[in-house]
Image (cartoon, rainbow, N blue to C red; front, side):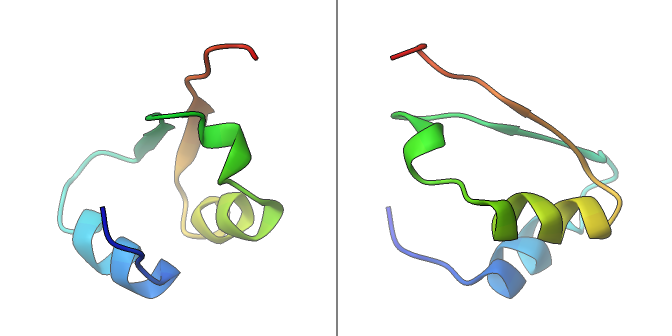
Length: 54
């Protein structure tokens, strides 16, 4: 996939009524950081991470 700025991601998902984000795909713990999680928490989203545990 392509790289996207946080504002671009937010613009894409904010049109949906759901307030949950499930981070998945590949190994999301290698890509997520505190800035990303905090950004969406501040916007009112609840979050979960689906990981393969490695």
